[in-house]
Image (cartoon, rainbow, N blue to C red; front, side):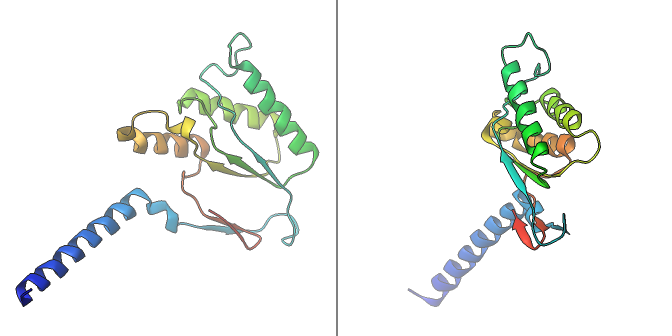
Length: 164
């Protein structure tokens, strides 16, 4: 190999690596943002983990086929409230379709169980929240953030523990 070929190869590798780095930054820019805070006495914390509500757009309608999911969510939240958890990790499949109405139902349910004090909530976006075609993932991520007040890729440091 001559020197020109080696230099061209190196430049192509740099261009490919830079392109990947830029795309990664654009897609996952929120990974660098962190919230740091303490809950409870700052040394211990009670954490509840729940997932797979899969609430649909008619989640609050007792006539809807999906209504049992709503009842299960209310029951699980009441148990966590009774146990005095300080943080709840909601580990995906919050909605069945990623629709605004579904997120509004989730918020209404959480607010009904926790009308005053709410534990710290960490939301994880699941595959049911992404059901739609890949080309609108940014739209669904924005909808997730707008409705839940949290980016799909968040980083919180609570009592010194990293939740990513």
